[in-house]
Every structure is written in structure tokens, then in C-alpha cells.
Amino acid sequence: MTHPPSIKAMVQAVPRSLGSYGPVLQEIEIALQSPQCNLSTIGDAIQKDPDLTARLLRLANSPFFGFANRLSTVAEAVSLLGIQQIQDMIVASSVLEQFKGVPDKFVNKDSFWRHSLAVGITARLLAMERRLPKPDKFFVAGLLHDVGRLVLLSQATEWAQAVFEEYQRKRILLRDAEKTILGYDHQQIAAELLQSWSYPPVLVQAVAFHHTPAQSVAKLEAAVVHVADHLVNAMGLGSSGEQFIPPLDEKAWAVLGLGPEVLARMLEAVDEQILAVEEAFLKNGRAQ
Amino acid sequence: MVVARDIKNIDGMLLAPSGCQLSERQIGILQAWGVLEVEVEAGEELARAHDPLAQLPPETLARITADLRARYWEPDGFGPVPAEIFKLMLLRQAQRILQPPV
Image (cartoon, rainbow over all chains, first blue to last red; front, side, top):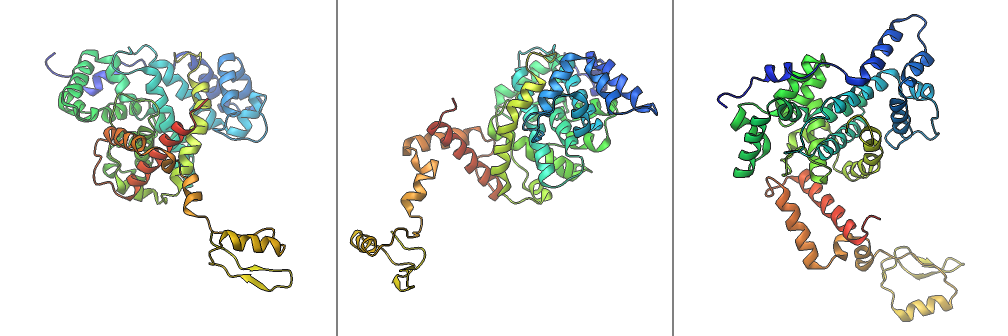
């Protein structure tokens, strides 16, 4: 081990495929381009995948979406949730699947995804509280905020080991150990990965600066993910390898423009949603 | 207990003003006059009964506070929002101890 791998090299080594969800997403894309496209065409494309159908209905009927009536068909789910939201959920599932082979040696994958899903839920709730447009985008940003760690673990295991040894030896923040050993951190890896996947620039910014939101050009979006990450770390819902609760940037909280009275309500909602979301994304599925 | 709203009889005559401290004897007299309900201010005891932190033995509260502080990277000099989050996390922990999840 002489020089750490470049971020670009690691990201290029990550398979670009959307895994087993690829055909469904492709079929939805094709259907959307057709002038005859309607909700039932989209529903039909999804229903060809029974596992995806079950997950989608489970999530659609969970407290995460909070519909009063039970949704029993995919077409109903598509009409109420919207096509963009369904695509976001499928892409999120495909990312979980993509990293299923990452070894559990340094980070327990169940715990990693629990943390990531909880940050996604909290970021979405903060965005809803702040009345930001498309709050579901924040679920994806929260879900993927630490994905850079998985890239490091899967593409440069020896360097990941050196980072974790430094972290344990010096009892410093994991991000600081990354910077000491690699010269960069998981935020930068995630930003490169999401850029290579052509994710919207705002989402890339929110992930790339979730520890340092003041440095982002999308300060509000980065602040949402930063605050969500702090809350979830404090709640102890899973872990992406960091054992400490990193500090909250109070300026980021000020950017959100929310009063502290929303916090208790927010924590309650996260507790209410996490089990259902975990069940929809993680249980007995392709991500394991 | 302290009266929260004036106590009047059915003719509107004031029996006890708000803010007045009621003794056991006065409560008995009010009952004899046919007063079935009075509004009283929530006392410290009642507030304590609804505060999970106040229900914990002091040594348990000290332990969970120390455990939570140990998880923070910068446990000192909290601003108002991190302090509120810290308090909520303590409450969460206290509720788990008092009512463990089934």
C-alpha cells in the first residue's frame, strides 16, 4: 500500500448496472415515452416483478405515506404516489442490492442501511415540515448520504481497514480518520459516484456536504441531510461505522428555519416509520 | 391544591377565588355545598408524575446522562438546539427504562 486509490478509479470500478431492478426501470422508461402510456401500463411493468410489487404495496400502505385507505393494486399505488416517486423507490432499492456483497467486517450492513433509511426518513420529514418541493428527493439523499463508505469498503478493502484502524487507535471521528489516511472522505466518494450516475446536482450537493453544509452551493438541501444525520446518530438508529454523535452545525439548523418544538414530533414520526420502511427495503429481499 | 378558576355556586356567588389554596377541610365544605368539580392548577407532584426523568432513581438518571454524553463527540458547550436534542434523547432513554418495548 503506497498511495490510496483515486476517487475516480474506485467509482469507475463500481458496476453501473441497476441490478435485477434494471429491466423494470427500463420498461417504465420505455412506457413513459409512449403516447399510449397510462398508469396501468406502468403498473403492468412493475407487476411483472412480484418481489418489487410486494415491497411497493407494503411501503405504500405503511405510515411512511400515511394513506387512510389501503391500496391493494400497483395501479392505485402509482396513481397516488406518482411515477417519479415510484422510480426513486426502485432506484433506491437497486442501490441497496448493488452493495449487498460488501463484507460486514468493519460495518454491519443491516446497521448501515438502518442508519441510512432512518436519515432518509428524517430528511424527508424535515423537508415536509419546511414545505420544500419534492420531499421524496430528500429520502433518496438521506438514504445515499454515506454510500461513499460502501464504495471504499467494496473497492479498496485494505485502505478501509487502515482507516478503521486509525479511527480505533486514535478515537477520532471516522471522517477525520478517512481524511488522514486517504486525503479525502466518504462525502467526496459519494459525490463522484452520484455524479457518475447522473443524479441531479442538488442531490449530489446535499450528499457531498452533509458534514459541512455551509460549504455547499445547495445550503438548504445539505442542511436538511446534515440535521437528519445528527438526529439519527443521536437516536442510535443503526450506524454507518461512526460510533460518536458528530456535532450539529447550529447554522445549518438556522438555515432550516424550524423551531425546536418540531423535534419531538419528528422523532416520534421517525420511530413510527422506520420499521415499515426497513421491512419494505430490507427484509427477505435482494438487498441481503 | 390551588384553585385555577373561581368556584361559584349555582347562583353565581363566589365561594373561593382562583389562586386560593384549598385545605382538606375547605374541600369538605365545598362538597357539602354541592360543588362536585373544581379546576385546580397542576402541582409539582402531578408534573413529576408526567416527567419520565423525574420518575427515575437519581443514580439511574446520572448513569444514562453519562452514557449519552460519552456518545457525543463534543459533549460540552451545547447551544440551545443540541441541548434540546440531548434532553429529548434522555427522555427517550428514560421512557424505554420505564416502559420497555414489548
